[in-house]
Length: 153
Image 1 (cartoon, rainbow, N blue to C red):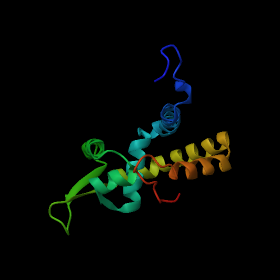
Image 2 (image 1 turned 90 degrees about the vertical axis):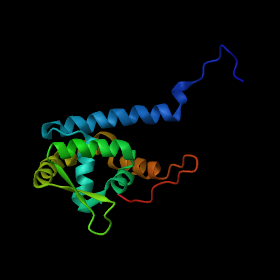
Image 3 (image 1 turned 120 degrees about the horizontal axis):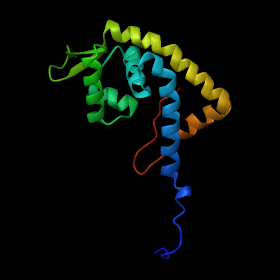
């Protein structure tokens, strides 16, 4: 048990440092994507669908490591805005697939150069090698029973 008057040392908290960095980096990317009217989470969803063609909500949530319910809510907003469509899976009637609409493809194509600029500026600010090492280290993080992602850049 810690003594009552001893500070906890929260400035050494791994979770706090990661959350702070996450918020700062997200704000950085959000500012770059603002001219397209997107936040980084929305852009990454459009980018994933652009690469995958179509995906079920669960698969998309897993790909982006977003809670399934949060992903479902975001997809609902993207559908409302005409950027994605949801259709039944041709192979599994119980499953629905999400895909980009023409407007979604156009917005992705408009936002991609903004994201690329954010990538370049982030690497210039932090050093390309440092950023690559950071991504590798983050992919290798192990938290409890959760295994690190095996995806590459």
